[in-house]
Image 1 (cartoon, rainbow, N blue to C red):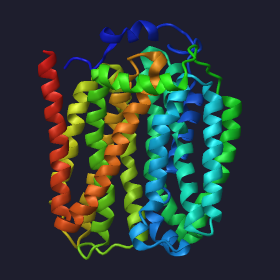
Image 2: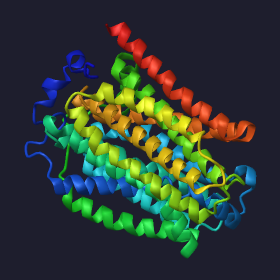
Image 3: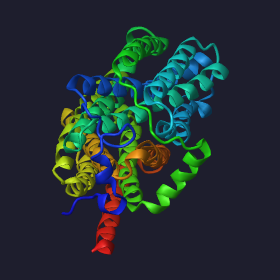
Length: 417
């Protein structure tokens, strides 16, 4: 299959070849140590978005939140992150990147401290919003690593960074459950705040500054994002492909705990934490996908990711209830869903980072915001599907959505042929 690239459309490749502060690779490249640091930072910061998910019940009870409003514990963090993707991440094409990252880490740290000490919902919920807003630092760091990397290994570098990010996302839920079981729900926010302080100190020393050469007005930045979505077909396609896969990822992780807690399996919270920990193995796909993308196999990888994500939900229907075999099969399904979602994210970012190098932060912000909103929508649909049709209805949605995305992929290829 031909490569999914827009270099010929946008002139991205010649720009990428120039070692400038806004576009191409850093003249000295990016060291393995710095790549590892950025990967760890992305994972640690992204985890802040997910710590509260398995803790809704104890937080709700402690702060006097009604059952009907309990979802706000997680939703406001997601809202903050979505706003940050659209309104803050574009600043990375204007503001010195290290300073922007450090400012966002400080904001997330303050939000975590207030969350841990909050005496009421009126204090906790705005703090959750701040945590989400500050956590968009990860989406400044990913394009930053891409800018530093030479073209020949850019997919590998971004894949390694994204692997750290995905491990953070997937380990956050079980870690929060374990810490809460041993200490309290307050402790995970305190520990993360301490980690953010230490991480900020290290990043301040280790991150080289990156000052974009352009200095557009903020309003121009936002207006250009809308134009980019309209004029860049690669961006629209990749955003839709990842929306489908991240949607079924969110659907799965919203509903599988309900399935495991149900009489069909009867697991406890500690066992579900172990289940989520096993599913984190899917994060290993990012560096593998990065190497495939560097070799020009991004389109093929996307097709396989869609197919195997759909097949994973087919396999979930065969899991026998009330058995260790059923739980084991669901673990395999979890790993496969996580693997496909993580891999396709990397394929998409690799293709998008070949567009306009000086616009990478805005392109990445549009891309992430699009599929993040799809994930939030899928979580809501998952709750409805579980309540009205149980796991068979959830699995049916998980089977169909990737196949619809694959049909769109095929139609786009036919139009370009």
